[in-house]
Amino acid sequence: MNASTQMEIPLAERRLEFGRRWLLRIRARLGRLVAHAVMLVVSLACLLPLIWITSSSFKPKQELYAAIPSLFPRQWTLLNWEWCISIMGPVLNYLKNSCIITFGGMGVQIAAATLAGFAFARLEFKGRDLLFYLLLGLMFLPRAGGLMAAYEMMHFLHLRNSYLGLILAHGASLSVPVFIMRQSFLAIPRELEDSAVIDGASTLQLLWHIALPMGSAGVVIIAIFAFVAIWGDYLFTWTMLDSQKLYTVAVGITSTIGWSAEFQRHQISTYGANSAAYLISMLPVIIVFVALQRWFIRGLTEGILKL
Amino acid sequence: MSSSLSTLVREVRALRAQRWGNKMGYLLILPAFLLYLVFDTWPIFRGVLMAFQNYRFLIPETTGLFSSFNGLQNYVEMVHDARFWASLWTSVRFTLMLFPIDLVLSFVVALLIASLGEGPLVSFHRVAVYLPVVLPIAAAMLVWGQLYDEQFGYLNVLLSGLLGTKVHIRWLSSIEWALPSCVLASLWKGFGYNAMLFLIGMYNINRELYEAAALDGAGRFKQMWYITIPLLKPIFTLVLVLSAGIWSATEQVMLLTNGGPAESTMTLGLYLYRVAFTWGDMRMGYAAAMNLVVGLISMGMAALVFKLMRSERA
Image 1 (cartoon, one colour):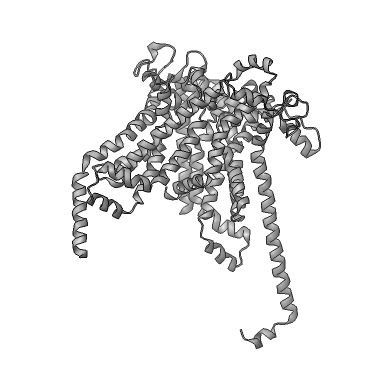
Image 2 (image 1 turned 90 degrees about the vertical axis):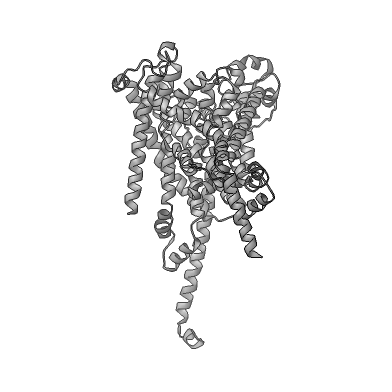
C-alpha cells in the first residue's frame, strides 16, 4: 500500500478501527483480570483446608471449642506442637516408621526399575521386547483380587505385620518406573557407551558410571512419585499392619483414641493435638512438592507424551 | 582414518553383542519381574480364584488354594444381598456426582491457568491446585472431617459469612448431605491431577494453530472448541481410564463417614472391605466375588469408552 491509497481511507473509518482495537485490548486485559481473579478464588479454596489445619494447630483449647471459630487464631500457642513432638507422644514413632517404609520402598523401586530399565534399553537378549510389553501390559488388568489376595499372600509369607513386607510390597509397583527408566536410558547417546566399552567397561560399570548419571532425571522422577505414593498410603498399609507400633504417620493419625489420657494433664484439646499431628503427616510431602514442583510436572509430562 | 574408526566401532558393537548376550539381561530384569509378579500379578489371579470359594480367613479349613469351592454360590448370594445392591447404588451415585464435575472443573481450571501464561503467580496456582493430590489421604480426609464438623467446624461459619444467612448444614450426620460431602472432599483431592494432565496437554499444543485461527477470525471460544478440545482427545481418554478407580472410593468414605449415617455412604468398596476384613469370619471369598463383578463392570465400561473414542475419530 502506497501513500496515495492510504490517504483514500476516510478519517472516520480509521478512527473506528482504532476504537475497535482499543476495545479489544481492554477486553483482553479484562479477560486476563477475570482469569486471575477466578484462579485466585480457586487456589485459595484449594488451600483453605491447609490454612485451617495450620491455624487450628496453633489455637488454644478455648478457641478450638468456640461457638464461632475464626480462621486465624487470636491467641497463638505452641502447646499442641509441644505435645506432638515430645517423646511422650507416639507421633515420633510414627514418623520413624514412615521414613523407614517410605525410603525403603523408594529404594527398592529405584533399584529394581534402574536395573530392569537398563536391561530393556541397552541389552540384547531373547524375548526382551515381549517381556517389556508384558510388564507394561499387566498394569492394565483390573485389580480384581485387590486387597484380599494380597493379604492372604503376605500372611503366608510372614510379611504382613513387618517393615520388610511393606517395603517390598510398595516397592513392587514397577510398571511406570521401569517404563520411565527405559526411556531415560534410551535417550543416552550410544557414543558414550561405545567409548566406555572400548576402554574395557563391563555391563555393570557401564550402568553405574555412565547410564545412571545420565539417566538421573528418571531416578529423581521415580523417587518423588514413589515418595508421595508411599508416604500417604492409607488403605494398604493399615490393612497389612496389626500392631500400632508399626503404623506410619499417615495411618497413625486415624487412631488417636489412646491420646486423651494425656490431655487432661497437659491442658491440650484433642482437636489441637490432632491438628498438629495431621499437619506433621502432611508437611514432608508439602515441602517435597513445593520445592520440586518442576520435577513433578516434568514427570507427568514425560509420562503422558511418551505413552 | 574414518574407515578404521567405523570398523573399530563395528567391532566393538559385535563384541558387545557377543559379550552382553543373553544372561546378564535376564539377571537384571529379575528383581523387577519377581517383585511385580509376586506382589502385583499373583493377587489378581488369586483373587479370581478366591471369588469362587467360600473362603473365610478366620476359619483355617477354608483357606487353602483349592479348598471350599462353591461354584456360583457367592454370586447367587450377591444377587439376593440387599446391602450389595444398596452399596452398588451408592457407588453409582457417588461416581455420577463426582466424575462430571471433576472433568469439567479440571478442564476449566486448566484452561484458565494455560491462558495466564507464565510467571510466579501462575506457579502459585499450579502448586495450589495440585497440592491436594499429593497429600496423604487420611490426613486430607480427617482435615475435611474437621471442616465439616457441625459444632466446631469452619465450613458452616464460612458459608454463613459468605451468604449472609445462618448456615447450619449437618454435613456428615444427615443423610441428604453425607454423600455430597464425601463427593466434595474427593473432588478437592482429585481434580488437580486431571487439571494438571489437561494443562500439560494444553502447554504442548502449537501456538501457531491458535494464531492461524485468530487470523481467520475465530474468537476465544471457537478456538477452544475447534483446536483445544480435539487435540486433547488422547488426554481425555487417559483421564477416563485413570478415573476408573473412582468407582469403589473406599478410603474417602471410610475416613469421613465410615459408611455414613445409616449406611447412606456405604460405597461398594467400603462394603467389600468390611465383609473381607472387619465383619464376622472375614469372608474374603464373598468379597472377592463382589470385587470380580465390579472389575468386570469396570472393564466393560472402559471397553465402551475406548470404542466411543475410536468411532468418534473415524
